[in-house]
Image (cartoon, rainbow, N blue to C red; front, side, top):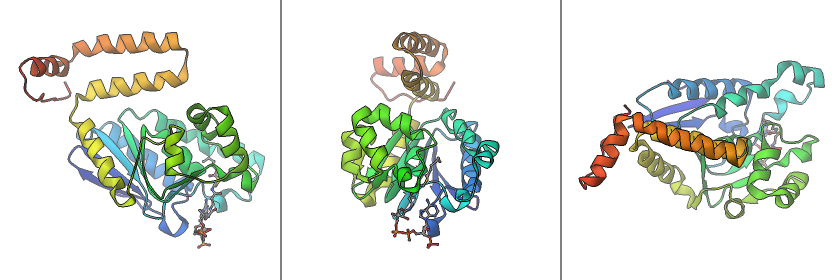
Length: 257
Ligand code: HXC
């Protein structure tokens, strides 16, 4: 079901979630984030959905955290509310999430896109971590995730100046999967999502987990983890079906078992 700030549509095994505060360029206030996270968690346990596309509208994916909501807060308020702790729950979603980005993708919006597993951007998309311009810094992972993608020297410039950068530049630093014409952003994202949805769900889940491990620990830990996940897939019917279908030269039919 859709909520006030998140519109939900199901297309086959793909859920399309649309951020919906158009009057304020989808500024991420607390109710919106609560609704989004609640929906992602519900989807994660819904066997009918295998992939998520998260999008905004033509003007904005999201122009950041809601500045009006936090402008008057004290450090104690911020610390006590600890609103950003809930973002950890996005990281725990096991199904793949594709961010389909048009327009502004700034501050917390850019951080939200970077929580996703892929970013498909329209040619006119504008990314940025402009928090420095309002006296703060990124707070939902921007200093860490952007730096891992862009490297220290490029991330430093982007975060210390807060300048916006286009989809092509975002792709050149590795934070955008693919740049497509603005009008095709959702369509292209859906194509990828449907392709992913046709695979073995357990293999997809383990692949996502293993890729994310590359960011969290050492190479040795990641390699060990990946190997174990690989072995574990041999306990699924889908592995048997996938390999058998290859040998029999036919398309595999994955059931998620
Ligand atoms: C609250 C916002 C907003 C935001 C835009 N709006 N961004 N409201 N929080 N982040 C509102 C405006 O106040 C305005 O409302 C309406 O959306 C349209 O925006 P305009 O500024 O009139 O549009 P435009 O002139 O086209 O400029 C677009 C813009 C600009 C360049 C994107 O809106 C802008 O700079 N926004 C703030 C970007 C930013 O600093 N983001 C980082 C936020 S801090 P009214 O009522 O006037 O029509 C952050 C911290 C992350 O994200 C921490 C972890 C989550």
